[in-house]
Amino acid sequence: MKAGIVGLPNVGKSTLFNCLSNAKAQSANFPFCTIEPNIGVVNVPDSRIEKLEELVKPERVQMATVDIVDIAGLVKGASKGEGLGNQFLGNIRECNAIIHVLRCFDNDNIVHVDGNVNPIRDKETIDIELQLKDLETVEKRLEKVNRAAKTGNKEAQTEKALLDRIRETLLQAKSARTITPQGNDEEVLMESFQLITAKPVLYICNVDENSAVNGNKYVDQVRELVKDEDAEVIILSVGAEADITELESYEERQVFLEDMGLKEPGASVLIRAAYKLLKQQTYFTAGVKEVRAWTINIGATAPQAAGVIHTDFEKGFIRAEVIAFEDFVHFGSEAKCKEAGKFKVEGKEYIVKDGDVMHFRFNV
Image 1 (cartoon, rainbow, N blue to C red):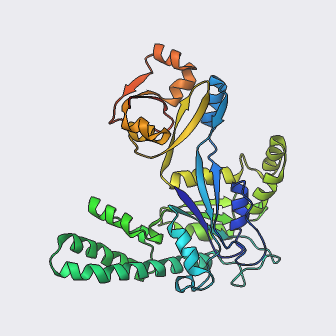
Image 2: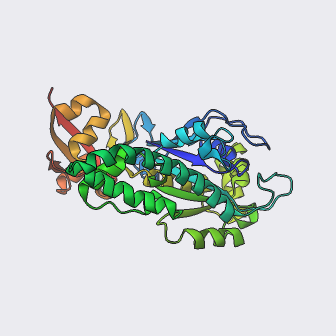
Image 3: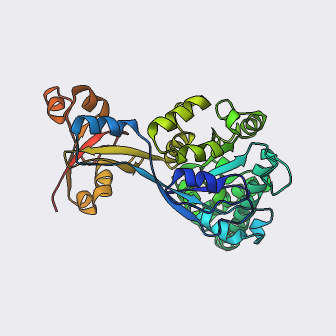
C-alpha cells in the first residue's frame, strides 16, 4: 500500500519526502528535479510500541511502516502529456492514496510555476488534470461496454450506468471519490476502474514557520474549499520540518518544537494520517525475541492477520490468542492477563481490532 505525494512544481514535495524518509530525493528551486518517483519506507510513529518495549524488554523492536512515493510536479496539460504528464499520471495510478501538497506561504526567493501564490488555483489545476485523465479512461471503457449493454447483458448495463454517473460527475469538474457506489457490485466495479480521482486524498498546507500552529489566510481558503470532500487538512511547515530532521539529538528537536509551539513533528502527524488514509491498522506480537507492529487492512480477520507474518500461518490457522493492548499494559504481562481473565482465544471469524496483542496457533 502506497501513498503518493502530488502537487505543482516547487510546492515542497521533495523537501517533505526527505523529511519523511531516509532517502534523499533531489530538492532544487526549479521544476522537474524529481523525474523518477522516489519511494520511501517510513516508520509509523506509535507510542504503544514503546510501552510494549518497556514491559517486555525484547531483543529488537520493529515498527509498522508505510510506503510514501514522491511524484514529480504536475503542470497544466499533464493529462495530454505536457511536462512529463503521462509518466506522472501513471505513477499516481499505482498509488493507493494521494497526499496533495499545496503551497500556502509567501517567499519571493522560491519561484511559483504560475507566478504567484494561490492554493485554490493550484488545487484546481491538479484536480482538473486528474479528472481529465479519468474522463479519458471512462470514455474508453464506455465505448466497449455500450455494445454489450445494448444486447441486454445485465452486468454490462450495471457497469454502463455507473460509468455514465462517473462521466457526468467528472464533466462537472468533480472527482470520482464524490460518488457513493450503490451496492457491492458497484463497489467492485469502482475498484476495477482504477480511477485516479477515486483515491482518498489528504491535503497538506505547506506554510511558513510562524503559521505552523494556527495556519494563515491560505489555509483558511483551502479548508473552506474542501469542506465537502470528507478529506483531512494538515498544516505543515515543510522548511521547519527539514530543519528538525537535521538536528542530532532528541533534546534539540524537542526544544525546536517547543519554540514553534508544537508537541511533535508535523511529519509524525502526517505519517499517521497517511496510514489511516490507506485504511491500515496495527496489531502487535510481543515476545522476548521481538516486539513488532504488523500492518493489516481495517476489517481483517484473524487468519488474514496471521498471513501477514507468513502464508503458512493463514493456511494452517487453528486459533488466535488475543489480549487487548490496554489490558496488556494494565496488567503488565501475558501471564497476569491470563490470571485476570483478559486472555481470549478466537477463531477464524474474529475481526482483529487495532492494538490487539496476538499469538497464532497453526498447523501445516
